[in-house]
Image 1 (tube, one colour):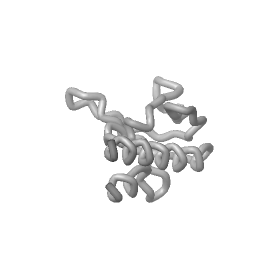
Image 2 (image 1 turned 180 degrees about the vertical axis):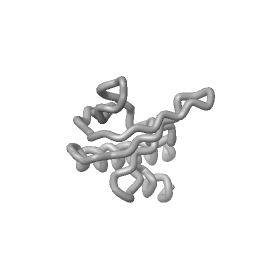
Image 3 (image 1 turned 90 degrees about the horizontal axis):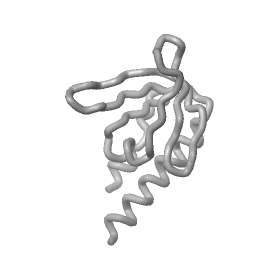
Image 4 (image 1 turned 45 degrees about the horizontal axis):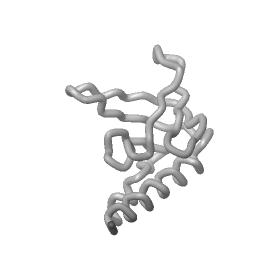
Length: 94
């Protein structure tokens, strides 16, 4: 049970980190499986209880991408704000 509580706290930390970055420019690196890696830049548009939305630059065919906080925790998605990687400190504490 302790592991689950630790995981929830990490997700909450990631959520708070991303909420504080709403409106800031971010770089995304997402593993889509089968050796597909998507790299994009955009602005965190909004955060919701279970996911966050990134509005992409005009150079992409999609307008927005959304990911869950668990995606960041499991390192399926890497979100970088400036020189800081979101969720990196949470993983180091566990």
